[in-house]
Image 1 (cartoon, rainbow, N blue to C red):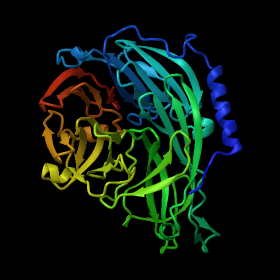
Image 2: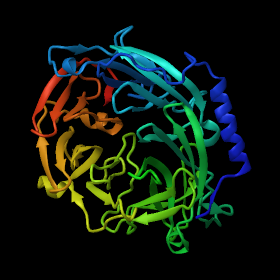
Image 3: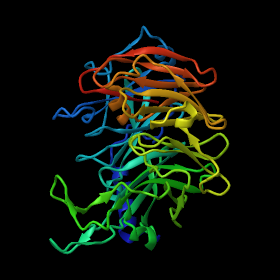
Image 4: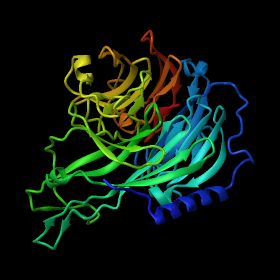
Length: 456
């Protein structure tokens, strides 16, 4: 597992910072103070692209007060002309926010400006002002990076690439070869909007696992530990069916070796030193076998106790929350939160997870064979869960919304969850994490092919 920072990548980092420094800034101070002491709750929503693909055309943002968020008589019409603020991104933006809700951060996803980082100051209902510098991370991470706010004021972008073909030779004499590949990383100072370091990990799962066909195909959800000296990167792992000599021809004509669903490998996470991004190491859970990569939502957080709590879920297929010890920076395989066991069911799939505080978290989940989507408060210490009832939970279109969900908002004891079945109106639900009371708040007016996907 060699970690390297090549001359080319150093040059790319310099180029990225230079491009960012040359981009237009709205003022001489890269982080002007926000004078408004009002706490804003930003809602985000996705709309269809030109081909009509639901939720794939871009992202709008609209800020409301906590009082309006809790008011069922207040309406949010984010899709009305002149209402929602359009975040820069050709497809659905990947949005993060400061803990106080005063700033939004985004790296544009795909398109001519894919990989460009933007920062916005939240100034009122539907009012956002771009601040700081634009950073071009595409030179390092490509135009479709995965990224998170890995700690307050610190962003980390990751991307998997440089993989080889999974075969050699020509038909009908194809032979399997391991694709290898690399994870590229960029550290971003969210306060000064600057790239502070870059690195790369050459994938090496070891001869035994690679000989069984296991390979990395994606990297996502980076998070820093409490000491901020280790970075944990979630990865997606698949397994090629090396006993099967058939290859698969994809829709774009690309050839790849056939894969199998058979897996006996635990959840794995890459760990590197921070901020140097060196000394990569793989840690493996013996408790779960589901990937730690989520889809568009953050799934690992530093808890009040200093441990990292990680939802082992791959696009809703997992039902466990794991723990990484603050003292060893490795999986604590004596710990296992099982949502199925906590709820007394057998078919839950976690779609989003948010650690709130003091061992309490909130999950959005679906159930196999049923329509809709569900909400539960979880006690990670007692390993219990409380299902919270909403009036949209059995609507079929809610499951597609959950598949695109990005963020659960938290302000003090209150948790904010916008729930809109795709193409249908809904509400923002306000949950008191201490009393477990759920209240239906502001009405969220929707439109065809669209849904609300986050609160910040």
